[in-house]
Structures are given as C-alpha cells and as structure tokens.
Image 1 (cartoon, rainbow, N blue to C red):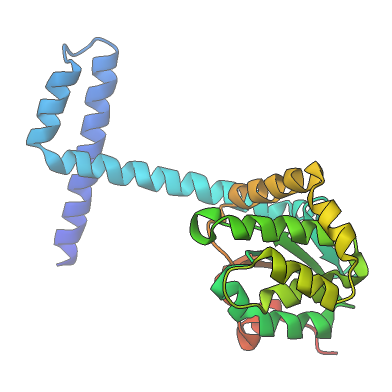
Image 2: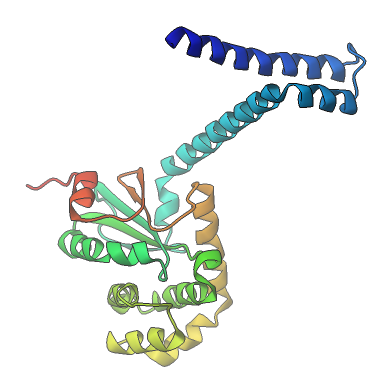
Length: 248
C-alpha cells in the first residue's frame, strides 16, 4: 500500500511537472501549441488539471503562512494605540491580543475567561483589544458597535467596563444598548455620541480590519497569546495554558 501511495504521488507530481514543462516550451515557441489545444489536452487528462490545482493551492497556502508569520513577528503593530485599546505595563513579558466582534457568539462565550484573566493579570500582562467586526456575518450593527467602542476609548477610565458590558449582551447590538451600557458604567453619553461621528473612528476601524486581514485572520475571536495565534473561543484552562504565566 505504501509503495502504491508513493507511486501515485510521484505520478501526480510528474504530471504537474510535465504540464509546466509543456507550457514553458510553448510559451517560448518551442512547441506549436495554442490555448485550445492545451484545453483539449487537459480535458482528456483531468488528473493533470487536478494536480496543477493542488500545487497552486499548496503554493498559495505557503505564501499566506509566510505572510502571517511575518505579520506576527511585528508585535508592535498589535499594540498601536491608534488601532488597539492597550492596557497593562509596557515592559510586560506576557502579551495578550484579541480580535473581536461584539455580535460574535464565540466572542461572547469567551467573555467569562477573558474578563477573569484580565482582572487577575492587568498589572503584569500587556493587553491589546482590537475591533474586527465582520459585517457579512453580523450586519451593520457590528460595524456601528465597533465605531462606538473606538469612540468610547476616549473615556479611557470607563472603557473596559463598557467593553465587557457590550460583550455580555444578547442578540444584535443596538444603539440603545450601547448608550444604556455607556450610562451604566458612568460614561458621558453625549460625548460618546459626538465622538462616534468623528471621521477618525472610521479610519481607525479600517486600519484594524486591514491589520486583521494582513495577519491572515478571517474570524472572531482570534487571539495572539505571547506571539502565537489561537483562533476560536477560549476557556480558563486553555487560556492559562497558552499564556503559561509565572505563578511566583
């Protein structure tokens, strides 16, 4: 069986290489072949097209992985105060980054663990909370909630309470929910409403979305814990294990 698999793999790799050679030679005029002839040839040998597609996908995945690795190495980008709400000591050895969407059910499900972890470690871990609303999934309410969250950062002392309160909501976030939670945590609601209209909020949101895409993040929540990517919901045990905090 193993020999058969090796033979098959070699055949597919050889087929892709053969097509690549043919295309190169045709492009240089060494073989009189046109698009129709190549199409006819590939239709008669569908395994060649499948091999070429598989090879292309492998190349794209390798390219994306390299881009993601490079993006993760630039940790400073995730702690840019123009993009993230940053908290905790600047010289902290441990770093926590979260990309979230207020209408995301998995972000909400992660809230108990994240809130507990933040309260216990805000004096020794560097935190970055970054907006990544996915309008295609959660609609325009997610985009408005993200802009409101960005505006709320101008009232820094109340921000984390506001952030956790919004994530604790059920159903799509509405303007009424936003302003009610802002008032509940002691924010100046009129100031918040004015700040939401600031064009800088949209620019900041565009920048955070661009950063997520550059990093290869396609869903929420996504965490970067001590420089390593952790997509999906987190509970206490997984979070503490990923961070490997010094208990001393």
